[in-house]
Length: 524
Image (cartoon, rainbow, N blue to C red; front, side, top):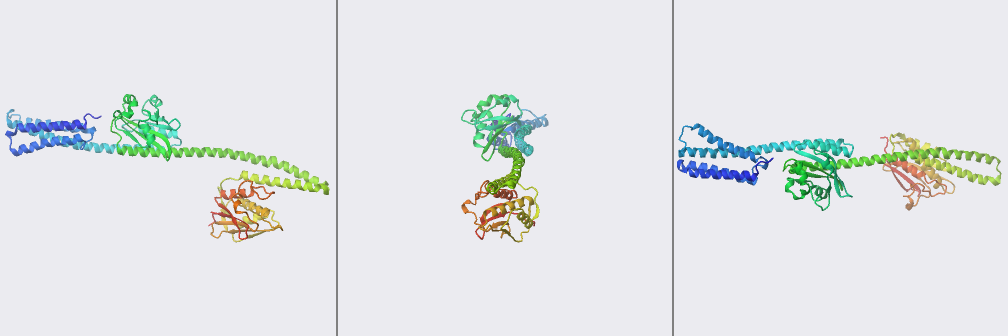
């Protein structure tokens, strides 16, 4: 607490210097002119120190009482010592009076100088202690930011940590509600709960909105109030603040990029607490809190998304189970009865049965493709080194490629999921056999390595795909053939993306379709 203001301290020193000058003039007849000039100059120096103190150039307001204490102590002690040494001297002699005045002058000046030095030294120590306190508080609060898993825990931990730091009396965090345009406390420490529960800060043009809290939200700048009772914007809260002994406060906005999350406010039991250094540190903590809250909200959104994906995956598994069992069984029954019907069918009924057979076969293809889509994951978690040539050869043998020719070069080895990679080639080969054969049912499919060694390609010598339709071929259900399921290329694209590959459809050298797969990781 400040006992004496800078101005009051300066006035006292100036008055003391003036009194001593008058005293020297009154006793000037009993001392040499040089001694008179020196002691008078010392008295003037005391007054000069008082002027600088009053202007605030020498010492801070909180330690001016120490300057007066040292000055008074020395101004009394030195004359007292003179009295003790010259106890037998004539008390009323002019020489004795001059010695007392000189001793008081020298003592007062020495005391003022020592007092200023002591005050400045204590200020340096206080600044160092305060800096250490702020640094420790920021370090501890930052640790809470790093380890907090949810916003409630984070905000309460920061309040608890900061409230233990002297001279902070109270710390509270408020969340900003854009719809209500108001801030309400969500965590606090240092004062009774009922104070915070009844507190509402608006962000409008009302008296409650023009205070430090409203300004912090509007400007996104730290608001420091050195003396709450000298700031008229804080008038709506004067009674409450006076009741709890709050004299200064700081309000720091909490935001990240364009999102304002709220603020945190710190109360102190003394004025002039939040200087420029402290404001900078508290502002940095506010920015850290904003970043942490953004991370927490992102993590929570991802967790909700993962839960939703898990539910979707369960539904897909159920869907795949229905397809695998409830559709395949009737199809198998239909095929069985179809075979029986063919054994007794005549020429007239054989054609309708062939159409039924075609429809059943198409249903089988649809079931297989839909199962493939339902069971494909979005990533490949454990790729292995596989021979691309062997995968291509195995895929070719599992597809009905009558009339097709496969050409390959030295394909080498890559890192991939062998089973899913074979499925990718099977769908591309099947697509080529269905859409790229000529009138004689022939097609040549080429699998090779890209010239820039970034991956591989699959090309055919069919009619190709028009440029304006190439962006659509990977869409679910797209097919240029009445007999296609429209799922094969979508499955191939899904498998490629699961490996992290880029897929591009271009035109082959012969004018057919060419599928390029890039960012493929080789065995090397």
